[in-house]
Image (cartoon, rainbow, N blue to C red; front, side, top):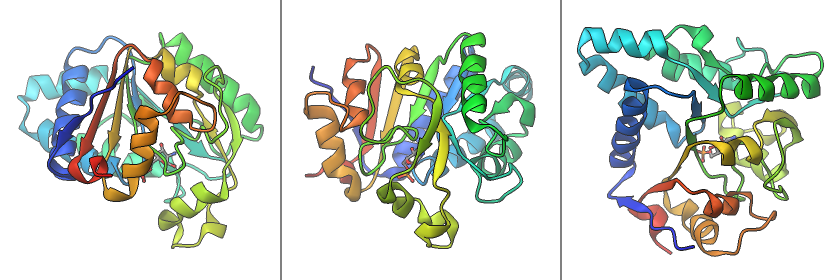
Length: 247
Ligand code: GLP
């Protein structure tokens, strides 16, 4: 199937467009929002905070009172207070700037004694909440979504995974540039939960993502390129900047 991305001039324009879609979803919330972390999402949450600040007070209160989101993933072994955890990232980039109740912004518990059991509990919590409505996704340089590393079948559910060296290098920036300091495991929602979302929003910026984005959209779906399974989703929107669409 041919997927036509929405291409905007730059990462700032992409962030504004995505923030507008997230806010529209939260003004008429039906199902939980699925959230992602990463460099791509930082300006998105910044743009969302600015839009919240401009909302009429009663609407902003409604957004806060009805907020319900589940993040895709978390590193195993990091406490939520650890500044390098995704929980702490969400606290800084989303919870504090929007004035949200932290209880309404859920992530897997990275310091659970039994990560496999925690993954099952988290997947069940998403299901119990009705599944994800709008799922925000970034794209890993090796084609991962969430932390569904190659190879990943479309049926895999929330689980504990071992991170590839490639991904640990990609994410070393958050750990003082040292890939060895990046945790070796993570809990991630699976492709099963991601593909069950009502709508999927794949956000891709920067020239270094151009080759993997092209493959994601054009290659026959395969486990070796987990993001390629998104081609099967009936309501996929891809928003990219011009750099990510060059190749
Ligand atoms: C990370 C995260 C993903 C994220 C992706 C892209 O490893 N687990 O949720 O979307 O890789 O990250 P970035 O936006 O920093 O390129």
